[in-house]
Length: 159
Image (tube, rainbow, N blue to C red; front, top):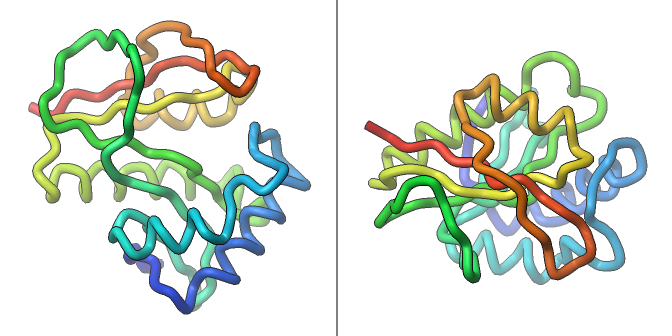
């Protein structure tokens, strides 16, 4: 498997992957989110990563600076990165691929000089919570989204 930054040629395959997962797995996505424009913006900024198996994209995630309004975190990090829109092909779920992908994202965040990571997980997404906790992230409490769902705040501090 290869962990890479996504490129412009990957956009349509990434969109197919998101649409596949939205039909088969719990997500809070839909109605144009994530959009092709957002994916292109993340690629242009160098913040979208993919995991490929036999040259086919099986996982995708944003990794970059997230604007978290009025957020109270356990630790005050000065250079935190966040994960967003992590997606693993439904054909590869349940095999540890998500945990492997998250560990690669953590390594990349460290390589990019981050002092930790912050991100949100919808409270109904129990499989994602297990994956993040298995990867060493800590649940730091409940938050309320502007989009009508509750989420847990997850955090990891790099030492």
